Length: 392
Image (tube, rainbow, N blue to C red):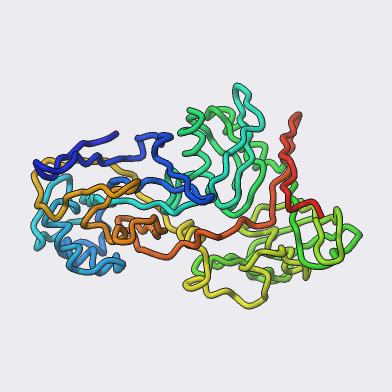
């Protein structure tokens, strides 16, 4: 649902979007091999937690969402960019438990590589595509339109679709989507019953062993660091995990390896390859045993993937001051209250409930040399072509 709000008689109408608004082809801008999303107005909603109750609306935001200055929150409350139960409130307003708080923001999504999402197979109940690296599968964190699901809807009119398995943002390859809830549930049952076989290929460091290698090592995921570690099987740490590896080819410097995960833990293939002594050759997170300081070197999207988004609706009804006006600058709308707009070119954001914290996004970030090649189950097999990097 969209709500239209004119903030000043001489300004343009502001249209506040919600998840009900489908992505459109004109939402995207392509520059130098990068797919950008035009910044847009969006409403985040959360409900007051017990520990927030009793705080003023400004103090709540200043204490819980530290990415913006205190004065911003004062201005946002005064002009109605922050509301309680759909109404403007004074800066001294004290919130109560379970009240609905809305934060209207000028939203900037991180860019992704400007690759198409090739459709491999289109059946009445199933759609398969080759997911490009750098593009998340579905809306999460700061991503909404710059996702496989969003791009398919905008460029092919395909909706709804239900991804039936996960692929990390930096991983490419086969993505299977059901086209209705019934088929999605059928796939889910087969996966949970252990009837589905998964095959990936990876380009790893060094000469991988010629004989088949099975790695049985627990996976212990640290959500704070966004990183997993491999632990010995009899360790109390982590979850049981097993992956079978088979060398396909080798040029003396790198090897192409078939990876068949038996379990499905976070970063399982990446960690088990590191554990084997042959990490993925461009995996900066696992190519060293030393943890990467992700607050400095980690990708924006990997961090944001751990942070969930709220559902949104809009309910503006009163005139607001001139400080909330919108102006236009080339392809990107400029909003004077937006803390990300001064540079105009889109940056990344970490989304935390009602707020966005500006962080730097590495536009040159490349995808991992890890590619989902094949999924097979009872009576069905879906495949994806090899990527260029797999040809040694």
